Length: 129
Image (tube, rainbow, N blue to C red; front, side, top):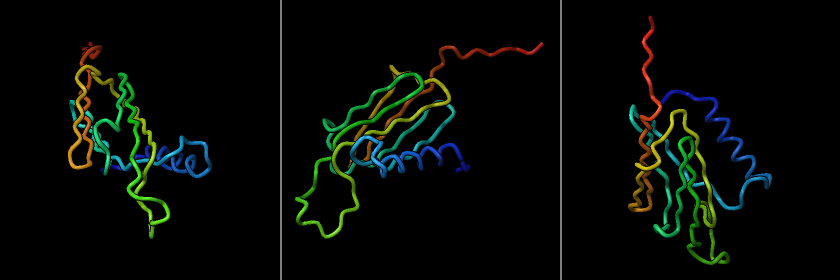
C-alpha cells in the first residue's frame, strides 16, 4: 500500500485528541480501508459486538460507524487491558461519491465488513477536442 501522509496525519490527530480529552469518550477500533476501482471496502475489528451494538450512517462523501462494545469482565479482575470497550465512533471521508442506497454491511466473527459502491451519478466523460 502506498504511503499516504494525510491518512497518517489524520490517524495521529485522532489518537492525540483521545489522549487529551477532545475526542469522544471510548476507543477506536482498528480499521482497514481499501479502495477498488468500483467501491471502497471497510473492515472493522469489533470483537464481542453484536449487530444491535453498531450503527452505520452514510452520506455520498462520508461514512460514520458508531457503537458500544460491552465490557468483558469487571475492572477489578483485569490483569492487563488492551482491547477497547465502551462507546466508539469512526468517520471516513471519500474522494469519490458513494452510492448510499447500495451500501452493505456484514458482521461475522467480530469483523464488520462494509462495502460502499462508488456512485456513477454525476460521473461524466469529457472529450478533449
